[in-house]
Length: 110
Picture 1 (tube, one colour):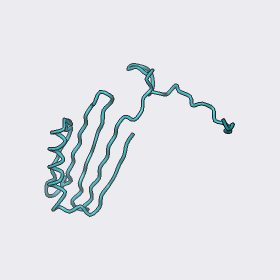
Picture 2 (cartoon, helix red, strand yellow):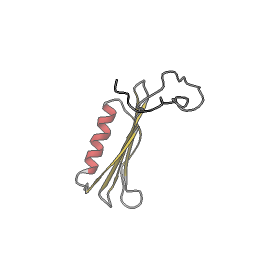
Picture 3 (cartoon, helix red, strand yellow):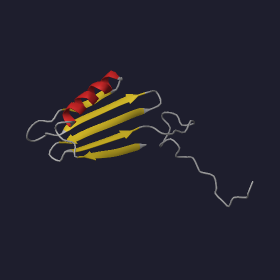
């Protein structure tokens, strides 16, 4: 499962300090910071923060990017949402690939 979002009109007076606090908060909560880059003047001035954690049921990932020239903040999150309990590591194909939904038909009133 994944979810993307964006905020417009995020000024330089708010975004850098917010990203720094978020970076520290995620580290304090046990997230692995896979990439963190504070923007610089000129080329490559965007700010990026990428984090992940594995809670034993799958890996969650989050990403945050701030574009100062547009005052635009972009984020996303991915997480496992369901799995086939019969699927084992090493099985061919994604979990649930061999599942077939039940046939649908008219409701019989029971």
